[in-house]
Image (tube, rainbow, N blue to C red):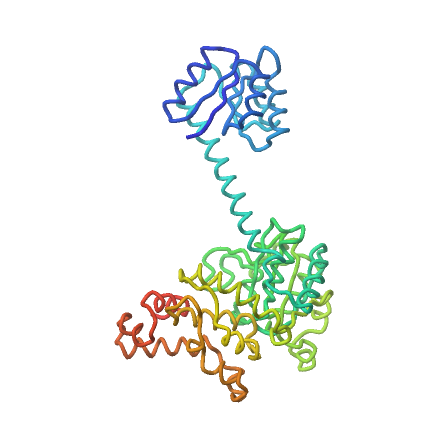
Length: 447
């Protein structure tokens, strides 16, 4: 049910509108002057206002201006006589949603009111969505207290205020994308798109079409035209992750776009201008890659205007307890399990372990432990054996490069094969619940 305020000096008009819209389930309030209407709005803001153009005390346009000055997003539908349509059009230019003409058609009035309410509900939902997205994006999302990360955050905050290109350097799993999103959210482009592309995740022949898009008929499978991510990121930020894996041919074209801020789609002839901020990231030493002839030196200096280095987790162990607390909360929500924390001896292992996979590995280990545990406290018996051995100093270098997710995926595949595809039996063999097994199967795209 919506609250509708009618401001009209004709009692018959107010009565007929009240009767018509009340039957639709709306709460209708009506007044006869502009001053009364303004006062009502100050007391309790309605969902929509129906406002007569001609009032005995204040001109309807002036009432509209007052409403829009105080509550810019309040929808106002003007009521006008047939001979005053030009004035109603002027009212729309001033900010009115629409207008209806006296004597009005009941169905048209209901439709106009319905459209106004629906549109502004969508605007409210969009605003809530943006608020939620913003709450999940920003420097406040970076969980840390170490001086090393505080310095990185301080540099990133300064970078956010400009449009300069940024190169984020750090090992896999340190949170390079998290920093890139935080920079975007703190910049003047925060309400514009943030588009990311992992340069190592696509075959060489697909990266160019992803970046620049293509025209219909540009190649065999190009049945329709497609926008590339440069177009999608226009006026926003483009995050190029693992840029060190980009092939030399695409590097040359990327350099041109950065310098000219324009490009052509594959198979196209039209030069397209874009306004895009570039943030790149790599886990490689690009100077060494340049020496090998696999990365353009001119592109390196173009993207490395301001370098930002994210330290590995092993160099900031004091952040581990804080990250454990953070992941305890997020995993409880994601897995729908009551995860309250980890045992003290588990934390000791965590503090001694070198974390070659950094923050990402820490989260994966905790997620794995949470799935294996039937307790709210994650204990030593749920820890991966390789983590305990390397933490004790008894492991060898093979464990430092061990990919936990790969091992777990293979284990699940084997369990399912032994159980001949029966998920319940496979879950029992793995000592986890069927829901936990299905969650992991979905995560690893198994079955």
